[in-house]
Length: 154
Image (cartoon, rainbow, N blue to C red; front, side, top):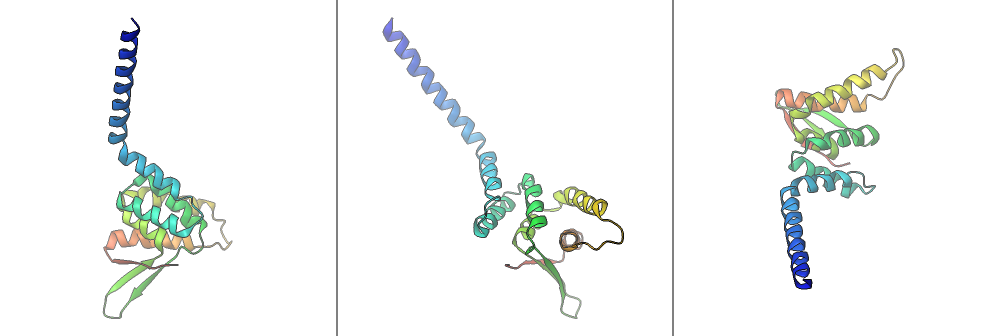
């Protein structure tokens, strides 16, 4: 009797380990995304930028809101338009914004919603920091026109 109980316990344990292993394998991309999204909250720029790059490489649309939050809070996030006088135009943006751009136009509705929120919160006649609005406009414009986008460091 004791032998049957031990065999049952070992078999059940082996099956449980197998099920956990299969579940981890199946969910590995989701687990990696969650890890990198968590790393976006790091204080260290290098860690945060690395996480943003990993998420943009994975095309993780769930990272969009966190990237927008960083852009809103980090005054260093910015962008510029450039032209060489012969019709060639391009834009440059800082690292986190570049990762948001790389996520692709699938994030258009999220960016448009953020622009609507900024517009609704703006009091007529009162100046505001248009940095975030301008940066989001640059990203939308690049998706629409296909203009070259360069990444610049802080």
